[in-house]
Amino acid sequence: MKTNIVKIMVALLVVSLFTVMPLAGCAQEAAPAEEAAEEAPAEEAAEEAPAEEEPAEEPAEEETAEEEEAEAKEYKISTYWPAVHPYYESVKKGLDKHAEDFGVEVHSQIGTDWTQPTENEQVEALVAQGYQGLMIFPLDAAGANALYEEVVAQGVYVCNFGAQTQEPTPASFTVATDVKAAAMAAAEKVCEAMDYEGGILNVLEVVTDPNTILRKEGVEEVAAKYDGVEIVQTIGDMTAIEECTEKISNALAAQGDAVNGIVTTGYNPTVAIAQILTEMENDSIAFVGIDDDPAVLKAIEQGYITGTFGQNPYCQGYVTPLLLQYLIDGMETQQDHAFIDTFGVLITEDNLDTFSDELWQAAYDLADSVKGDYFK
Image (cartoon, rainbow, N blue to C red; front, side, top):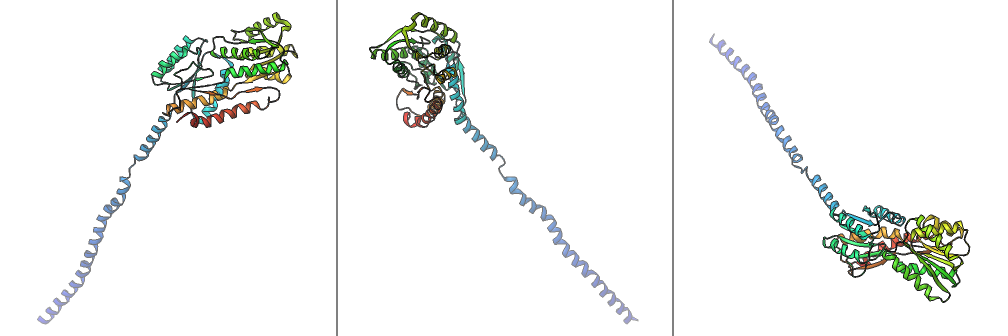
């Protein structure tokens, strides 16, 4: 009996051992799994941390630096021209081309009359608006210098365009036609067409314009060179084409056959005479004017006038702002003031189709060379 009880107890003990051992094994395997489950979020967080630490603000800082650099290169430049006039419309073509090629827009300020006091008032207003550089057509060769002294003293750079002030001048540059040389070239062509015999009508435009005095002197010097040539009359102080037409027609009627040649050194008088001689179907009076108005070019093509001197307003509008940009950038000039002659050409029927290309090419060439030629 005791033996059977012992056998039963041994059997139960063996069964218990086989039952507990698998459970113990499961417990040992579950512990690493739980630990892994607990460690996984920490590892994933560690892997994601570098992305959170990347400097998200750096692109914004780079953009700010670029914007500041762009702002530092901005230029505030304006022109001043005394009153509405066809010549300035050609200057504006040069300004537009400058903006296209150099990315710098230039403000245009047009005055109300051809007087120095008005110019003073409007230029002072431009300075008050914060313009850094001004390209100005001076109305009084001496009086404009007083204005320039005030402007330059306030840290604003000034360049003349189209006309020159008396030297010494606070203007850093004058970009203009050598007007006396141009008038002399026109007068020489008229004398040649007259076979150096006869009378010349010398027609001026705005007599207070500093260019007009030089042009008058140039025509007179050429006429004085030839014994058979004389100036029979000088007329001037005219602006609008209607006024020019009236004064010139009266002079021609008064002088009659004494006028064998005409020289004009102003835009509107040139247009007026081109129209007068075209209506006359002129074949006897030699005439050379100035600038390239379509009516003038057509009269040349038709053979009613001899020619016209083509100034280069495109060049003045294209190059002068570039000089002001260099000055604003702090570049030093080689001298206190420099006169830069813009290339001009005598237009006749021989070069009607090519003169415009010559003028624009001269503008491009000058823009390429001014930095090396006039700055240190």
